[in-house]
Each structure stands twice: as C-alpha cells, then as structure tokens.
Length: 397
Image (cartoon, rainbow, N blue to C red):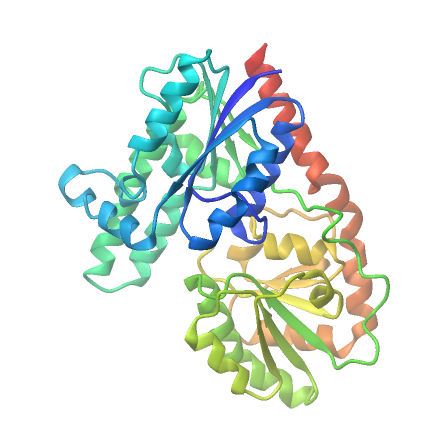
C-alpha cells in the first residue's frame, strides 16, 4: 500500500462532466488499495456540499475555496511573472501548508498531480515519485483559440500557448511518469520532452453502472438526436449553435417530427434561446443522463476545438447510440467498428449523416450495438484501472 497525495484543480465530485469524470475515477480507484490524501480547489459554492463524500473516501482532505473572480485576479499575475495564466490562477499557500503537515507525519510515497495546473503544486524539493496526469495537451487548445480569435485575444491566447507548452514540457521532464488520455495526445507532446521520460496513454473509462446499452430501439417517440455536456462551455455552445442554425433545418425538412435534445447544465443564454426553435428541447440540469441517451437514436459532437477523448462520445457509444462527430471530437477513439462513430467535418455531410441515422432507426440501433463490446473491453473503468495499477506498482517497486 502506498501513501499518495492527490492534487486536483477542481472538486473531483460528482463525476458529472468533463475532467471530473476522470479525476473521480482515478481517485476512487486509488483509494481501493492505497492511503490517499486529497488537496483540491472548490470553484463553486456547491462544492462544499461534497466535502463529506470525499472525506469518507480519502484518508484526509484539504479543500481550498477559489471563486472564479479570484482565479481571474490571480491569473493577471501572469503578466508580471512570465508564467502561464493556467498555472498562476491557482494559489499555492494552503496546499503547501497541507503538504508540510503530511510530510511531518511521515513520508509520502507518491504524488499524483491531476491536470497541468497542479504540476506546479508538487512540493518543492520533494524527492519521492510523481505521476503527472496531463490528461491532454492543454496548450494545443490555446493555440487553436489564438488561431481563431482577433487581437487582442489572439495575442493573449498565443502567449498562453507558448508559456503553457514550455511548462508542460518541463513538468514531463521532471515527473517519474506522465499519463495522457490517448496515444494521439501523447504523440503530440513526446517530441518536445526528453526521449527517456515515460509517457503512457490511459484512456478514460465508462462506468458500466451508469452507462449501459439500451435494450431496444426507441419506440413510440419521434426520431431523436442528442447533444450532452456542460452548456456554458464555449466549444459546446459553439457546437450546438452551429448544428441548430446550419444542420437542423435540413434534418427537419426530411423528418418534420424529429427532435433535437440538448442535455446538460449550466446553460448559456444563447443555448437557452434554442428552446424556442421547433423540435429543439433544452433540458438544463438532469439528475441522470442515461434515460435521455436511451431515448436517442443518434448523438452528435460537432466540436471544432477539442482535446483528448470526449466523454460525451464514450457515454453515447456505451449506451449503444451511434455518434456523428467532427474529426476533432472523434480523435483518440480508434474503434474497430468505425460506422458506430462517424467522423464528419462541419458541413452538409454532417446533416446528411444525422438524417440518415434518424431515417433508419433500426439500422442506427444496430450500428450502436456494434461498438458495445469494444467499449466494454477497452474503454471501461476496469481497463483504465488496470493501466493505473501497473503505473503505480512500477513506481512503488
């Protein structure tokens, strides 16, 4: 059994979106065989409601409240320090004191830093083993923002790309092991690091108790396409607005009774207004995404800026729902049944692919079922845990 310090940039609970799904899965798995001490930042007032749940899971916890406004103010320090905004947005003092208390009570065997920002919180002078779960190459996202934006935002984003890339490389070169969400992401960063530094792909896993195949095609309901995710996240907002404005009219011309469900919260005002469009439902927060996925004939992910593996794609495939996704959103999922995950760039072909699935619901169901065995074998929580166990065991030997 190892004594592990887990550092996380956001409350790793509940596992209801993006990075929280991965961070909670890793945390829960580590606690099954190791003594885990958790330090994390609370970026929402509701996060304090989950302190007890995390305290029951871990040997000790150190929640650090951090409001969005405080993060922005702290991030401004980047202008004077030459450090990435991503790194400067998270204060170090509270976590440093927590780590000092842990070290005073006995040595830590391992530090697990989840996400790029937390690599900066590995204790200075720490001589033990470290795992840097970089997840994806976040600097690439800032580079894409810079390419798509006008000055002065383009200057800010390009600066963040350059500074964050240098920080990511430095973190890789000091970590005992770096984890990435896919081989594609690992290949993006490997050329920049030292050749001897180990970088391992550890894909996200789907919880089979939360997401499992729909038993039969949806019956007694109109043909339905779904988009899931946090609906205030800019790439998600851009995706649904584009689909609603560009593709949805074409789909409805062929299938007048078709429905487009946008499920997830918080909801940006521009997305909320889509509920006024015929055939579009904006659910807001839902207690359980499974019933919505089981009622859908197809899922979409028309995202133009995406890093790593999209959980929304994994969850849909686990539910036997075929997915039409942009190449950016389909990256990192080399399914042996490519027809279950259709890669289409934004354009007419995207609308045509969705229309084809909704027009032949039995075929759509069959396509979705074809991906289920692969997802269960290669993209499950068990598969993810096996890779994590091997990494920890190797470093603890």
